[in-house]
Length: 399
Image (cartoon, rainbow, N blue to C red; front, side):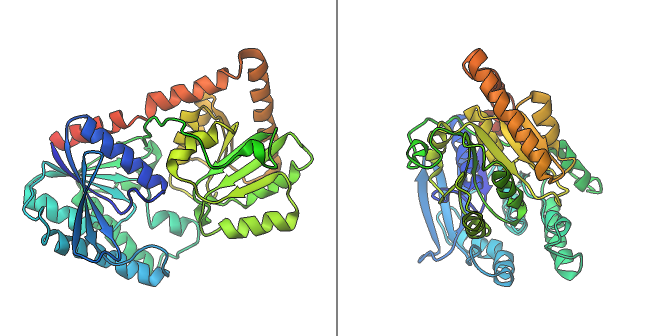
């Protein structure tokens, strides 16, 4: 099939979404499909730029800046983004291209007009991959009321939903947000992550202050949605355990505050590092023992973060501090791949962390650390492969 994939993140960006779309794109090509990725690109000196990425056509289209700017400017520019992309697409060598299917990835919620235009021009179906149910999560967390701004974003999101013939949600729990959708189909499309080799890592844990410890690692965005303050509370309560350390790697709106807070508390069992290239993640995890997942407890949507997949792939059990009722809780407990805390109680989180450390030590003595590691890798192979995701998307587009 000839497929257009619309997104607002892709390599060389290092976000989890960029990594996901990289892996998905490679798998489309591996399965014999002709894929073109359409990307908004701020600051592009020309209307469009066509590149090759591992056999994928990447068409970068000049569009307003939407990253690292204030919320008002971002909203205006995201609203304008699909129209700017469509205008510059019509100036490109792919202006008359016709597709057998259109796929788009949310976030952003603003791709609907572009997806709709491509669908109509080609007379094909569209598949929305939704990983972020906005503005619901922002309202749930108190970052936004349910007044006019919320209603505006909700209308934009609903338009996007109406354009899609099929919507792939992360977990069954998110079905509740689409019960009133008048047409189209909703299905669970699990997240995915391709196998990645260990090519080393610029972070040397053995050469730093966490050397010789059982290391809890958090790699990814450190923002409002993660609610990571409780993790520093945990580190403070465990500062007397010289065999345990905490490593935080990444960027985000809360990264600087967390570093400053750790310094003020004098936490010598905590280390921070800036974001690293995604290719270095396997090399990082090979030096660690337990992965951390953090989601603010005010979330009501269900979310299985990309970092959870990468931990499973690396064989790292997880310590999860997440919102009550999240589908991920049942998965972690059912598959015995970690511990879950849903009440933001640092006492409970400490108890669960120590249980996990003891389990790792027992496994290490009894089975060369094989038991829980094998369960994690088996879960990764069973549920989270790009091959499964691409096959499911293609099947939906052909129906």
